[in-house]
Amino acid sequence: MIQGRCFCGFVRYQADGPFTNETVCHCTMCRGTSGAPLVAWATVPRATFQILAGTPTTFRSSDHASRTFCPRCGTQLTFADDQHPDELDVTICSLERPEDVFPKDHTWVRSRLPWVCLADQLPEYPKSRQP
Image (cartoon, rainbow, N blue to C red; front, top):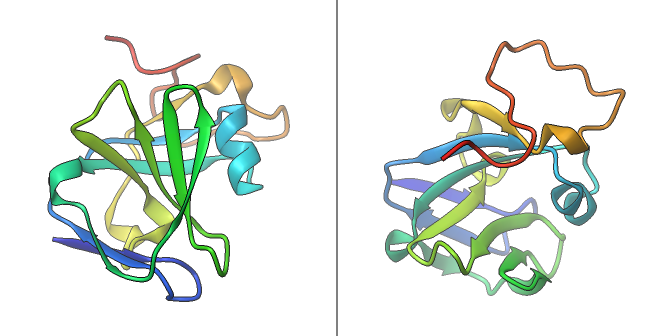
C-alpha cells in the first residue's frame, strides 16, 4: 500500500502496488503542467487507486489523457491515459515516501532541456519506452 498527498494536504490518496513504469519524463506536456524541467512518475493499477480526502481537479491535457491536480495548492497528482485504462500514473514526489521509489529510466529525452544533464546512467528513450 502506498499513500500520497498534495503539498497542502487537501487531497490524499492511496493505492496498492506493485509499481511499474517508474520513469522520469522530459516531455513538453509534463514540463508545462508542472512548471518543472522533468517529472518522475510511477504506475499503479487504476482499480486500486482511491482518493482518501479532498477532490482533485481534472484537466484534459491531450485528446487521450487527463491529469489531476490539487485545486488549492496546484500539486500535480496523476496522469491517466485512455489507451491504458487499467493503469494510473502518480507523481513520485507526491508520495509520502518518494525516496522509496527509484526511477528506472528517462522518457521523452528528445524534449529534454539542453541545460538538464543526466548522470544517473539510467536508460534514455527519445520518446516512450520501446515495446
